[in-house]
Image (tube, rainbow, N blue to C red; front, side, top):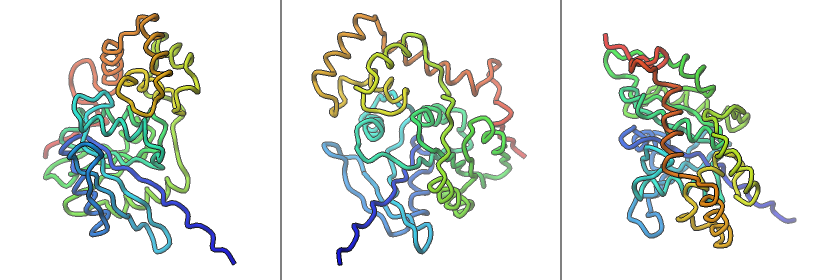
Length: 268
């Protein structure tokens, strides 16, 4: 009698800005069940571990380097982009870790990952800071994703986070409405290349158009065609990135410069 092959473990990725508390949360979730290696060609830690959700269920947890945006300015940030655009094994779920005291600065990348089409949980870290009140319910309503207040240091909320991970892995919830609305030129270019850019979401295709020169998984023929088409259409990648970033910020930062009510952190 043949033994059926063991099903591949699901992949959950921890993402967030530098110093958001990802590594501390990673240690809370994996304990001693973790491995540390280097990304190929670069001395940056690649931390993976096993997250035990129940006696019958465990998943692989990958802690990515900290990054501010999907428009990288460092080698660490390029690793994050490569993970989502190049790797064959894509995440079943992203847990985005954000420090509540720096929340406005850390939302940009959350909205970008959301537009890639993966289920996302926002883990609000350091909620046990003295005198801090955060309106998680309003954040959840705005982003249409689960929001779980936690403390990576003390373990507050970690069990609730695990339960939410179990729920989303069994019933993935992906918003159909993108957070960022493409310009006409961005829409036309992503539609022109269609399935030739191997990414399901339109935003993944747009990121590929921005980063195609250094993405290794793209064949040279496709790179050449992207180069010719974007030049012919006068597609200014830098200007497009700036416009997109400003557009995203405008949705969660009021013009007055004051904090949004749903992101309000009150000091007692």
